[in-house]
Image 1 (cartoon, rainbow, N blue to C red):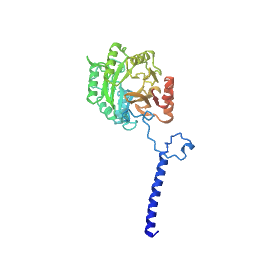
Image 2 (cartoon, rainbow, N blue to C red):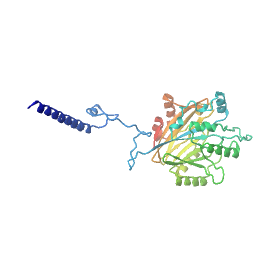
Image 3 (cartoon, one colour):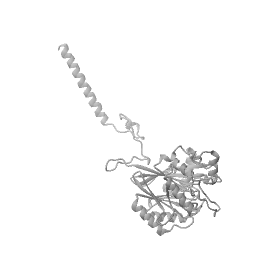
Length: 371
């Protein structure tokens, strides 16, 4: 064999060898499996590492739909009572920071969620009337810009302070909220105006219903009609109630009966407020109930329980609530801040004791998974 033939043979052999190596490597790569977080040493031997995808907010990988498209996850945050008068206003004025009540929360925290809802415990108006109650709230119109800038999308006006400045103040408040792009729902203002507001959040049409049962009982016939209309036109119906007895850790019998009745009529989620204490979680016919979120921005510094609150994020997948994330807060000098570490653990443990037994572990973890 001459030099030229030898050179050709070596080149050909090298090419054949390289192709053979690539085929062998490809064969073994096809045999590999993904390593799971709990894999044993035997399972890891001779296995290639494949990067894991992050899980969805509801803690498990969502299966693709029949079209092969990953389902959309939507989050709707609820916070408790926001009161912007009295010491809250005085502290804000003294600080010279219009956003003083929100200053201890993470920057633009509400924008981490697709939608944010609060109970607005009083009217936003300049239409003051002579007080007819011992506790009489009026929130300055300047607060509207703060609520918008912080990321509040909707508020319930169904509470025992909404009419502190009379019907004129209530209607003025609703008009001002609407003009700023904040959805206001709850209570009937005029003929044809019902107690619901609607919003499309992600791919889900949501109806928000609001009733205050602290002054007068909910009129069942009217409520039934409102719920029926909401169900007909929306994918998800959420009721935000102002109810119960103040300064108690458990719902009273009338609240339990009303929550069950609302779910029987077609409501998907029931959320409560008014007691100024955070209460626990329950389910009825598979539908979640958060009995009371407690305070969020308030000046009730005189007790430990009134200085705690709860924010709750509904996790919606394929137009159904599949879980709830819980965010306990502590309110110091009218400023809520998120609890962390041991403080968070202790507070969730207390809320678990106030919840249904089957939900207790989820409440302790801060994540309730609904079946």
